[in-house]
Image (cartoon, rainbow, N blue to C red; front, side, top):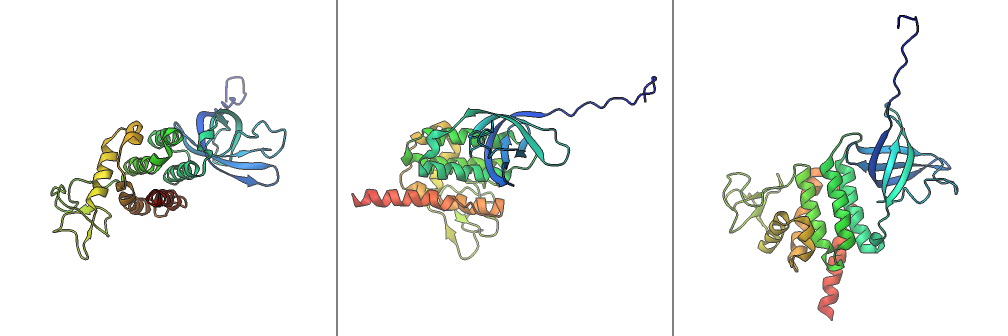
Length: 267
């Protein structure tokens, strides 16, 4: 209490203003929607978009999947936040082709599952934003290797990327051969691989090593050929182990690769 006998006025909690990417949305009652966005500074934020279904809503067409926004959210007081404002800054029309859309949905799903409400993770935000840029611009035939590169970056961001060069048990060099470990999902030498031994195809491991060591913007220019298909199964296992669930879109992304390879062989 102040000297005048009045209670001190509480300072209003500041609203959250951030660049945001729409990860998902769902209907809420008749006219509103719940929107989940990923932000760089504040992590994942789920908020109520009041009246978003109404034809005169200022949010109409702005909170679609993967749109980028300058967004304002109500203060975080432990309950459901309100999306106060959403200015559309980027609508990714180039992702509307089926294969690009599925691939973008897969990467968005990975970032959604790995992120937490209100916990800043700039690395995941940058991975999603940069990954969507790549998937918009890369030649369609290069989409699978871009997706594999993004998966490796994602595994590294969540601390689940295995060592491709050394045995997880003894540290021996894996230059000549490598085997999968079913219990740790790492890679091992022949002596520590366990039984039954599951060898890793050399072309697959080399493709993953190349993607790991190459700058992301250069992934579309790599000539990895069929080794991309051979390498696809390893990150799938590592991601499932790290996230404890499987992406609903990944299989379709790489089935598209198999279909394209089949079409080329038939020509």
